[in-house]
Length: 184
Image (cartoon, rainbow, N blue to C red; front, top):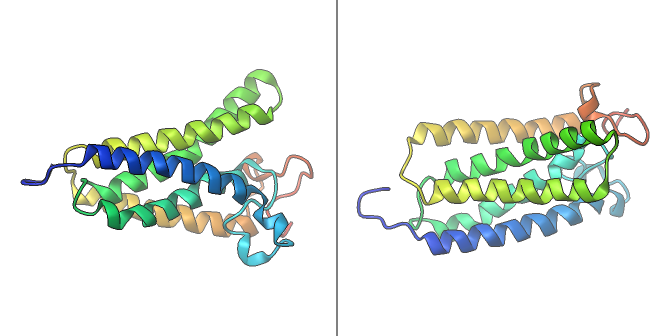
């Protein structure tokens, strides 16, 4: 903790729980936005354009990033490690979703919508919890925050790029059609 600064644990908890609800709601709506907009291309980097695992990771990443921007001002000076905490939480969500999905489908041999939704909820809770722990923990080295911010930028660029030109591997394949990305 910074000398002379008392961390507002209750405020941080309220913001992180509210964030979990925001990410869940906005992410769930985001699932349908590309279709609802008549496949409007400027929406494609931010909303799933097909049923691939990769495209569904956007449902957590982008709303979590927006929430971090929303809560930055209200938490300023009340918590530690804001950039590190939010970046770490945001970056944790997509791998949790993917790991959960590939683990349970390897066991069951197929996917279930209820378990897909569960993975989304668990990823959000895990990301927000990690964020809370870092927000309310001791002050960390600012170099860590810069590194994680670079990773957030790289991840955002990957979501944009791989929407249009994805690698041809399973993570990016639309299950129903066997296609990749939006332009294949």
